[in-house]
Length: 253
Image (cartoon, rainbow, N blue to C red; front, side, top):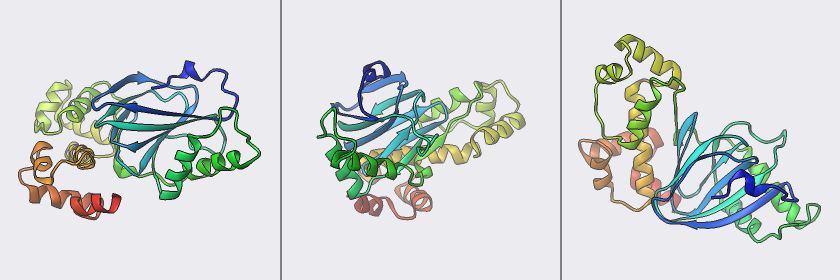
């Protein structure tokens, strides 16, 4: 994926990139000199920043301000459509997941066809401005898991993201962090806004969402992300997203 040094000398406030990546491709931790709207026209991505872990299924994009370090993992073959945007006072200063409506999708794909030195005062400029206006939409917070800054807690969250099925107890994790149980539970909630159990379930559901978007069956996903039965998984998914897994994906198709 394009890194900051590749953007030097671009003569317009927005520059586009279209590229293809295979499943399991990992773009290691890096940042950009411009803000970035990252959209997968096809496929599913996972993105980890210093503050949160995100899942970006179809019909979603992620906005990242300039200078935000992040790692990108392609959960399936991914068709990436990226806009690199110069900083502006009207743009969000935090990472956020954006709902990609049919109109926004069409605008992003049309932006990919614009010439390098498009006319900012003409039709091309209006297309770009409509996309920028859409970036201010409310974030889909349910698609992000907050990451702690405490260096004792961060490895624990990274381990659970890598393997959401882990069922270590609070005492196990507290010992791993060299903290008392009380200090661990208090610090974890202060850092993430959730208890360990709530955070772990949220990460499991995000993993399930990525697998659903890749076309895996519900029963397989339920066991692979650590639920005892498909019904337990479906109930947890519906509490989190308002609909059962099959209907959620049907609505996004």
